[in-house]
Length: 103
Image (cartoon, rainbow, N blue to C red; front, top):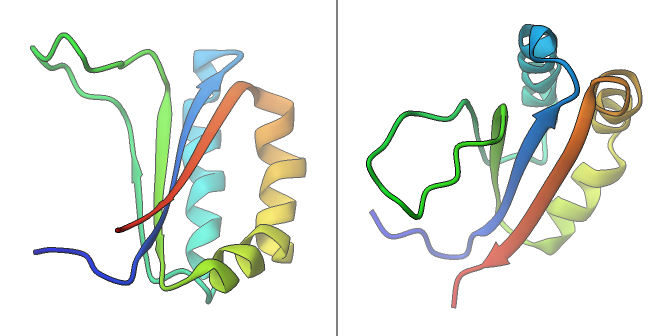
């Protein structure tokens, strides 16, 4: 399947304490209620033989949107803000978000 008219928001997250992994996953799952999201994938790294693969992160979030306006609405959605303030900020040591749109 080729994704067209898609904006991708991909986030990799590192925890301060690995013991907080389930708390992070539970927090990420709250984001599923945000109506601007077209598709969402919450994952953890796998073991791979690919020397280019970075599996140093603890969890990843991949969200597909139809357009920039939906991403913008997601960023300021109260559910997202609550996740960032109450879950991510207290337990995460690093968060890297990358946004792209197909060409």
